[in-house]
Length: 197
Ligand SMILES: Cc1cc2nc3c(=O)[nH]c(=O)nc-3n(C[C@H](O)[C@H](O)[C@H](O)COP(=O)(O)O)c2cc1C
Image: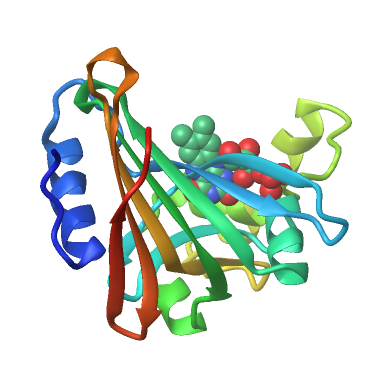
C-alpha cells in the first residue's frame, strides 16, 4: 500500500520532489489541464505549474486563450500529472481564481526576454494566417520595447486552482494499482479513502 499523509498537500510535495529529482523526468511541472466550455464540452492541454502550496496550483497563460475563456465561464477545472518513470499519477480537481496583478507581475519578471516578448506578440488560440505574420508581430514588439523593461501584458496572467478533490495513483502489478483519494470536508480538513483500481 502506498504511504500518504492525512494532508494531500504533504503527499503532493513529497511526490513532486521525487519527480523533480528523477533523471528521466525532463519537466515534473508539466501537467494536463482540463476545462469545460459553457455548453459543457471538455477540452484539455498541457501547462506548466509555476507555484504549488496548500493554497493551490498556479499556471500562467494568455487571458484571451481558449482555456482562459472557458475558465472565466466555468471555473471548474482538473489537473492530471503522470510521471511514468515513477509509475505515479496525481489527479486534482477544483475551482480556479485569477492570481493578483502583483503575483503575476512578479512571475512575469522572471521569464526570459523572448517569452515576455512572445506573450505580447501572440494572440494565443486565435487562427494564424502564416508564421510570417507572427514573426512580424514579434519583431514589432521587440522594437517597441527596445532598451526598456518588457512589462506584463494586461491580457496575460495566472490562475490558481484550489482543489476540493485529489487522488494519488501508483502502478502495481496485474493492474491492481493503488489509488488513494482525498475529499475536502472543511477548509483544512480532508477525508482520505481508498478507491478500487
Ligand atoms: C509541456 C507543455 C507545457 C505548456 N505550458 C503552457 C503554459 O504554462 N501556459 C500556456 O498558456 N500554454 C502552455 N503550453 C501550450 C498549451 O498546451 C496550449 O497549446 C496553449 O496554451 C493553448 O491552449 P488553449 O487554446 O486551450 O487555450 C504548454 C504546452 C506543452 C506541450
